[in-house]
Image (cartoon, rainbow, N blue to C red):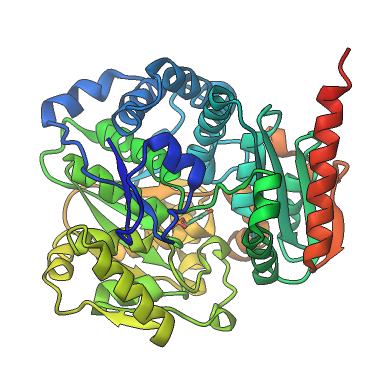
Length: 476
Ligand SMILES: *Cc1c(COP(=O)(O)O)cnc(C)c1O
């Protein structure tokens, strides 16, 4: 299987190449040239596999260029009770009214990003070792992605990480999750500024081709195809936990920001899995607007609302480009033209496109507000005795509002322990905290606060590169 760019102007590459590269050289996103078909019998036969075994089956379809043994080892290590707290990895539990929660946040950082990152860290490391290369990941985070990436990369021999976060602007829990890491290959830089400035610094570092090549700088951001591929697994897993009693399409509600999670579900549907989608946004409703009207209208960064489901606070949805490519039957030139239009006018309109109208047969959307989240958290506690986090609450609220008859699976994307203030507002008390996280905020922190300038970031990168070389070079 080969991967092509959504802009249609880059050579086709292997899975491993797409994983290492992240973005395609023409500025597009990698997508599979064709999606394999999986029969109902084959899906059903997978019902007896463990999560790790299912992961190997799925990943080997998308990464035929990687050795099956490499995939098996990475899946077994990533999707283990050690990492996700149980061999089930992603349990499916019932709520009232034929509604189910698929728990995707039992990993090391308590958010669903771990589901892909834990595998990606291992696949990256194995592929780099195979190539005899190293990579220095430079990223910016507003909270969840950074800590998930760091925890996935701790101790990996061929990967070093420099993560920029806005000083004082991530939650104390998120800050502690990142800054309490004490690993020689991980460096936290907190910048005096906001998230967008951190992201601009990452772009500036990447724009210097000579510097980038000298330090083998790369990324593991949310547009990486390997992350999408790893997220396909839990849609199949969740469906198979309900099947075989189900004889119709299962509805899945997805709290959505950058469109990465739900796009993985869309690929699972293209494999042949009988699922349909309810897309939930918070007040930042650019995607809800698109699915209701066909108009995609990105917001200026200063108009992004700061909400109580912060991981969904986005101005534009990066992975959405992959869906637009599908709507246009793989016409990269058409996608390139739309993104040019977006750069000029901030919008495009697909309302009269046949592909858009078809989409609405199996994907509906809605937006949720702070009041909806609070009320949903209260209701689920009252009815089921389960505390859900604010992002999951967005999905449960919109899912129940938009559902048709039949079972509804809601994806749990984070644990409530990460968002204590909102839970206190809803329930008057702090959420339960997993034992491993007790005292997290009191642990010693390793973080360097710097001004938001490129020179400081470069200096930190040079320092990290030198430090790791010293460590291995100094061995007897
Ligand atoms: C990242 C994130 C989301 C949004 O997922 P996308 O793939 O960006 O759509 C939702 N909830 C939580 C808790 C997240 O961390």
